[in-house]
Every structure is written in structure tokens, then in C-alpha cells.
Amino acid sequence: MRLPARTVALAAVLATTLTACGTTTSGSGSSASAGSAGSIVVYNAQHEDLVQEMVAGFTKATGVAVTLRNGDDAELGNQIVQEGKASPADVFLTENSPAIALVDRAGLLAKVSTTTTANVPAAYRPSTGDWTGWAARATVFAYNPSKVAASALPASILDLAQPQWKGRVGIAAGGADFQAIVSAVLSIEGESATMTWLQGLKTNAKVYQGNTAIMKAVDAGEVASGVIYHYYWAKDRAESGANSKNVELYYVGKQDPGAFLSVSGAGVLASSTHQADAQRFVDYLTSKDGQEILAGSSALEYAIASGVAPNAALRPITDLQAPTVDPASLNSATVVTMMQQAGLI
Image 1 (cartoon, rainbow, N blue to C red):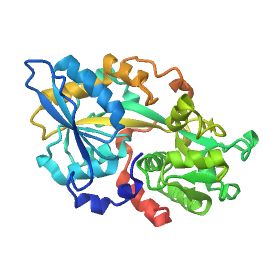
Image 2: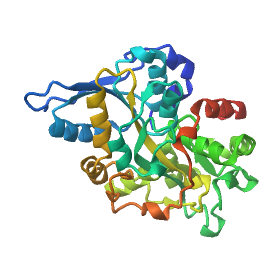
Image 3: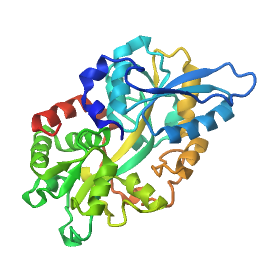
């Protein structure tokens, strides 16, 4: 999750250019094989180090050079909508689904190839067929066992609106990660129940500037618990555990919105003049080679395609008991409006 303040500032984003937004450009195709004439531009909102690993594998395999322009989900999604058919982007990669669903609803994506759809189980693709999931992260309830007894863990993420959680839960309200979780709640529970939940969080929650900040606060006992994605904890434990030694994860399961599995998206812009190479790139992300890079990386996100098993350090994906959510249904604009009405952002 990156720069939550900018995530909220949608109007400002719409008025900026990529350079003005502070995005960076990195050429990643220097290893293109001799004789390759292909090159593509990828607007990337996923973790840059992970995508650079996958770009290197793609370029080595195909000879197609890739230029990355990095930003966050909302700023790049809105940037593409603003640019429309004049966008220089060939491919859009996101951390979560709402931003790419926004671009899809604007009619700016080409359908992904049948080769790609064959790689990815239907649960991780939108019903529109216009983009695909290629990685995933699990919603978890992080808690300090000295502050929350196992017998007091919530049965549902919706329980966090109840009075017993007042001042005892942390959220990163301005970030794309938490807003994707709210999008899932909206898709599953509907607008009325979601607004009631958000109003309860306004009363109960402490707002932090990101998932790492929440985890550190839980670790320090500053707040009893928080809602984050799994990999923040997993990466910290894989390194030193300095920020998570007093933090445990509770997987809500039972198809609850609190067990939401958020899908990272990949789509080809319909306006791209490099359709074949752009489709090859998306296909590579979901291929066995691409998914093995993901599974073996330090990102510790879930591989979801081509039958590649996720990193063994992660809870098995089948044990997450995630709810069924059509990624195409996730609506960032409605979520931002509702969170503003609830006073959370």
C-alpha cells in the first residue's frame, strides 16, 4: 500500500500527469535479446521489486523490452481514465482490483487472451473477461495476545463495529488495501450494512497511515488489534520479526468479508498499439514461469495461476475460506464516497 493521502485525493489525481504525480520510470528491458523489436509500457501499481523480477523473466524469455511507470492503484487508474485512448500505457498492473475495475468500467481494456484465461481459475478473474488476477493477498485480523484473548476474537469483521472494540482496532482508512476490503464488504453485504459498519468503525477505530504502521502499533501494545493483509506480517517474520514479535494473525474464514482474498489485476489497454506483446506480458505473469517467480519471491503474496503452489510459508489458500467475490463488482468510487460520508476519510 502506498501514499494513502493521494489515494483519497482523486480529484487532484485527475488533474495531474504521470510526472507530476511523482511516478518513476524505469527501463527494464536492457536484457532484450538480439533481434527483438518489441517494447511495451506498463503502468505498475504493484510492488516494484516483485514486478521487476517478473519483467526480467519475461524479457529474457521473449526479447520484449518493458518500461515501468510506477505509482499507486488509484492514481494510475484515474490517470488512465483521464488519458483515455491517448494513454501511452500498454498494460496496467494493480495491487488490488477496484482500480482496474474502474478502468474496465470506462471501456478502456481489451479482453485478455484465451491463453491467459486458461491459466487462471475463474475465481480469480472478473466476470467481464477484460482483465485477470495474477497474485493475491489475504485479509487478516492482527492482534496482540496480551491485549485480546483468543476467546474474544471477532467472529466476523463486521463485529468490529460493536462497542467492545472501541479504541481497540487499527485501520488504514486512506489506503487502497483497506478500501479494497471495504469494497468486498459492500459487494457481499450491500450498501446499508456497509454504511452501518463504517459508522461503527468511525467510532471504534484508530486510523493509521498504512498496514506496517498498524502492525507496529499492535506489536507495541498501542492498539490491541488491526485489519491488514497477511504479507506484512509474513515478510516481517521472514526477516527479523522486529515489528511483529508480539503480533499474531487470526484468519476469520467462514466466507466472511474479513476473509476476503484481494486479487492483483493485469489488463491490456484497448488503445495499445502493441497488442500482441502486451498480451504476451499478461500471459507471462499468469504462466508457470511467471507464477514460480512470484511464489519464490520475497513478496510472499499468493501465486494463484497455472497450478503453481504458493510459498510454503503461507497458510494454504484452501484454508482461507475466502468469500466468493466477483472482482468486477468492486467499486472504488462508491467506497470512497461512503467512507467520506462516514467521516473515515
